[in-house]
Image (cartoon, rainbow, N blue to C red; front, side, top):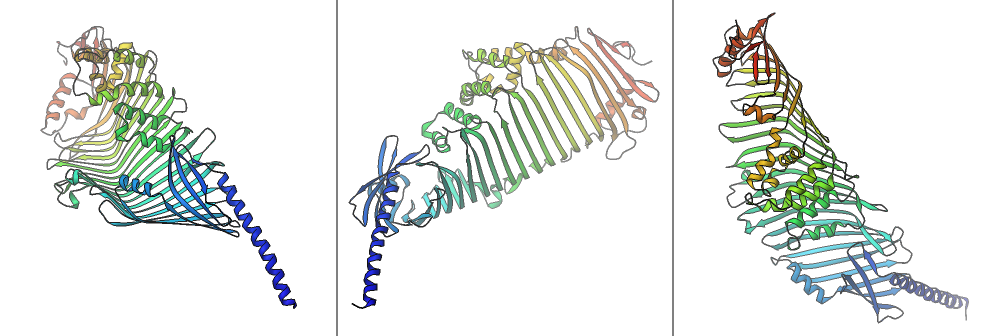
Length: 640
């Protein structure tokens, strides 16, 4: 035997030994992998595997899903184990395919699954190609690729759907998705990232006769950050276009439309036992009533530590007869809640619209530039208010009129809520410019409101300012207007009930008889009120032609034991009011426009005010029902 033959024999022997060893190692790796089953997707289901008909090179595996103690075989796989390489061919359970056909209203024609794994590589790859006919009998394909990274133990999933028409009412065109699952322990996985894009979705309600909703180029994103005690979840929805129409829509210009819509919601500190799929499942129409829906909504928002959300719309158009009656550009709405301490939470809501036009008809048109509102509630007891709203809001939404009798527990629960109300409220509304067709304009308008609800006192601060206000019909112009109105009201249990019924009027009026409602709401207007040094200052002038700015100033202090209602009803006993007002002398000089304001204001200043040091002065006092104008009784000659 020559050397070449000996070498080949030895090499073949070594190769055989290595091959057999590699085969044993490959089978060992398969055994190790199978031993790790079942795998669990957090809060959803378990994946089990059963092995049958195995030999040195092939194995038959059956995969099953187990959920709520129900087991379903979903896939049969034939593994072929070669030295250091594993390939697999799989097919779905025919019974499962039949069930999917029925539930999804489709017909699966062909399904091919191929997988490959090398013991030396860092991952496993698998591809599934499904050919099916959708609910409209149109051929579609679903291409899915799964990659498993051995080092990080993460699973990446990419899907591409050509389209899906469930029926005439729902059509999806081109869907692409990327998903990432990470391991929480050896056998437990959770979804931490999702990225889904759609080309177009058409939704037709009542065959499109009532409403057709078109969603163009959508992008849905989920990011999940897992911690020991819970997780943070960020969800984003971006839509290039949203269109609403019905059978009466004449053209594209007659569709309600929103362009470049972006919505995001970020929740932090969500408890581990809460899962997004379970929350969505509980919102299915066949599984909730209105009370349960309200509970689930508040749970979604507040069963965490912090939540913030933002909605941005580049342009929103509401048309009528192919003309925009509402056109809002660059709108943004932001809501945030910090409720780590649910008895002392802080809530904020801000909104702004860069350009807003409203054309209700030919006689009315409004436009606004840089409109914004900012609102903040501090020291808010989330638990108390959510319990109250969950109990009474659903029945309020379903009620159409006031009941004949009071709800047996409503006043007791309202009183309890009122006793624990100690929040602080701040609000501001501002706009750079606002104009109303044929009526007037205003520039740099600011309105603020601040109130502190304490144990026995309601302290409120109102502020109004603007650079310029022009009223066309009255030919009147105000500039550099500033108003500050501080008030204090004594809080009684009845007043707190009435105060809450101002916020929740719809709830109060649907749980109390009309007699009880009026009795409950009236104390809001009867509570003693104190005004300490309210001030108003402005420059007054004619419009559109101007002459000379006439400064006006007002100082007001008042104590009203019977509240606002007492003054309106003429009950002035024990009331104290002091008002000082000055108007420039030019108010009564020169020719003024022939409008109602000027025709009444000029004579009133001349008759009621005193001219001193080049200004008209008015000193008004109300003391225990007695009214004095410049120190003289109301029925006396007011001006010498």
